[in-house]
Amino acid sequence: MSSKIKAAIIDLYNNEDNQGIRCLKDILNETECKLKNIEFEYDLFDLRYKNEIPDISYDIFISSGGPGSPFEGEGKEWEKKYFLLMDKIISHNNGNNYQKKYVFFICHSFQMMARYFRFAEVNKRREKSFGIYPTHKTAEGEKDILFESLKNPFVIADFRDWQVVQPNEKIMKDMGAKILTLEKVRPHVDYERAIMSVRLSDEIVGTQFHPEADAASMYYHFRKPERKEYVVSNFGEAKYYEMLGYLEDENGILLTKKTVLPNFLKNAVGKLRPEAEAA
Image 1: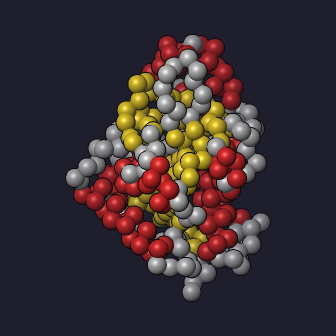
Image 2 (image 1 turned 90 degrees about the vertical axis):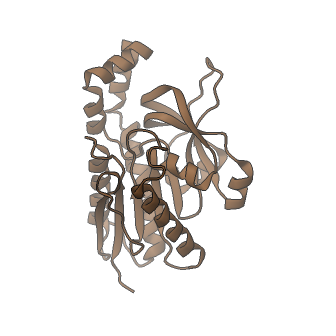
Image 3 (image 1 turned 135 degrees about the vertical axis):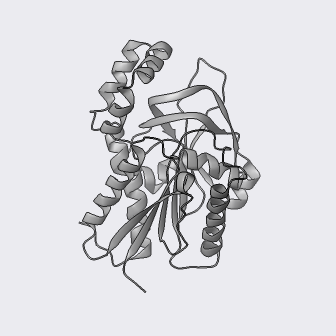
């Protein structure tokens, strides 16, 4: 068995200008640098735009966010390839007690996985969610390795027109899936709180928020006039500048970035290569 660990980033941004892929590369680069005695490498696959898909030889898969509807790919070749890869990963993990495949889904990918596994409904939000908000851990989330050292609630970057809601309790129970976090409390509106993260198994987990987001990526979004106008018109100028203030807070999205995906990767590497030593 090779000591090398291979990770795949699945890019679902469809050639849209974004910061998500840069942030994911940063986190994987940091992981590579911190591993003392394990060779670690990753490759990028542009699925929606170039129809590129990793094969099953990779150990770790991180599937990105992306623009548009999570139903947009229905019937398209790229989505067929994507779901076929998921079939292969599930089959591999079910038939292999060792060297399982680890998967992390982000936002758009998370919504697609809700469709694929049918563990909840996916529908369009009444209004777009855009900015920095709290998310609340469930009892299961309090115990999950992903969120160790994060307070309850903790701060997330959240950009979405769609949402995952109305969990199917039977399917989740049959899968052994657990809801880890829920949308912020909104007592002024009578809407169900969206599911913000789910653990489907010890190896497969996803978040509807962007755990990779950093201050630079958020400044990138907030500097755009239409984004500022959206926040100011919907929440007020004070809220806009409050969100900007969160960007430099060491306990804000910076801590979330340093915690969630790094914890996922640390756990995956530790299970795949118990001899690995982190700096």
